[in-house]
Length: 175
Image 1 (cartoon, rainbow, N blue to C red):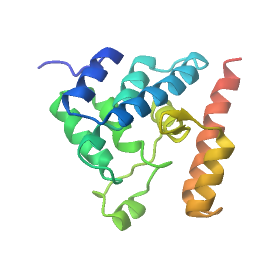
Image 2 (cartoon, rainbow, N blue to C red; image 1 turned 90 degrees about the vertical axis):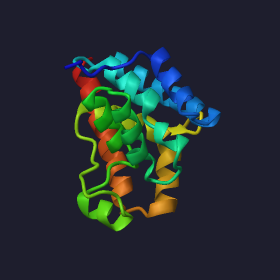
Image 3 (cartoon, rainbow, N blue to C red; image 1 turned 120 degrees about the vertical axis):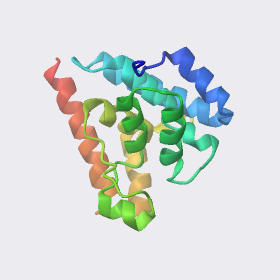
């Protein structure tokens, strides 16, 4: 049985192009990757190769679907590419700041837990949230956007704070 693989950044770019991913989505993926690489450089014991590949491919599903279902489409595409299961899980869980089984049901997503839990999953999801298109946004800018969109007490806002605290805590451990 062939081992599942984690592609290089260049191979990820080729995969994005193979599925006709829109140029602005590719630019966004490159921005997310740049942010994620910066976090990885400050964190010990993180699978940087996995984070880079997942950051590059997290929105490949947008080649077919622009709703929240793009994560599910991305999973299907990457399973067809025979890529590493950990990479595929990151793509599945990168949406928002995480979606519980209950929320998934309300949204019409397949019943599952879409909450990022591993360091790599959280880095990609948080980096994605900090990328406004192909521009990097500040935490406060994204927070204000989330508050106006979902409300101050929403699970999205709480999840965003959790992601920030998680990343800051593991960075501080490495200083």
